[in-house]
Image (cartoon, helix red, strand yellow):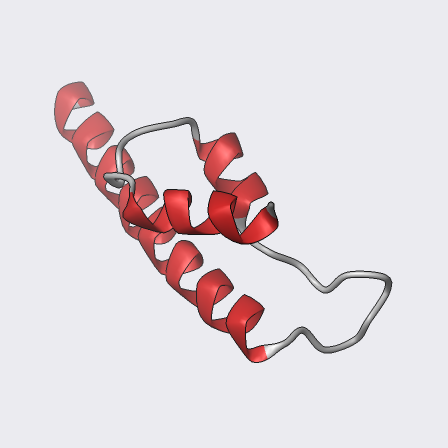
Length: 67
């Protein structure tokens, strides 16, 4: 079920799983609908925030390792 995968993605620690797996967990409008429902918008916003923070921390840590 889609909601179970989304809930697992929300509850998992930010650094587990690949970035691609986390991108795939973000819901998108189904059946060509222009607007998603409130649940999908809320989950997508939260997963995007978690993913962005994770990517920023990886970039910063990689820059520190290079310097």
